[in-house]
Image 1: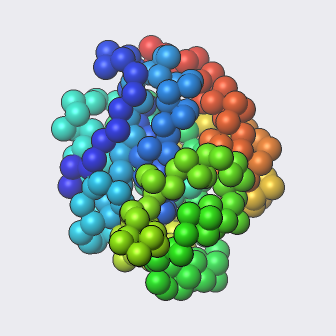
Image 2: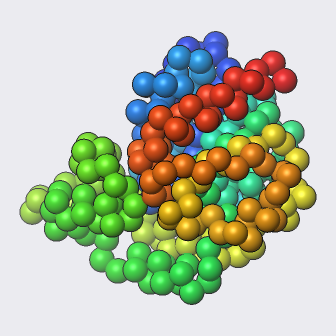
Length: 257
């Protein structure tokens, strides 16, 4: 499937493809692109299958998502771009690196969901299988705040991109419920073996949130550059400048590689 694409920056600049998290959308990268990365790069963000403006048809397994990524970059004429993935998007970058390392110049993982403990994944899948309707804008912002998106102003600005307003004023998330439930269950499976990560890789992560665990740091030692930052899971919001700086530095130092 060819995915819906958001773009910022000069079309002739080095391309950076950005992948969002389980319940998000490509415009999550809008602020990072407009305020920072588009100075240096052509920033391209996808709405993944089952999300926002891409089609919502199954299946939603990792292999299908990776096929979508390859089909979309081929349609864009991109040979070997840099890749950035947040949360679930970070796991997809690891899956892509294991299956198609020749498609990646450099990789960036933003607080990646390398894998989720099975009981946590099942709990999240159960939560997401309930009614996807949110009663109000404030309720949606509270939900996002509780999930680690601590910048309330940014969470509020993101509401029109994240939800559609129903005739009765309630909100429905612009994400396939089946996709979200399926993805959480997929995230309980083991990630590709660390030795399949053979491209230069940066990982910006939030120790306070705990999604990246000590065993992940040990398993990937020597295979990626870990950069801990303050804040919680939405590092592109809660640690905006630290995240932007680290990614810019890493990608620019490899320019021409």
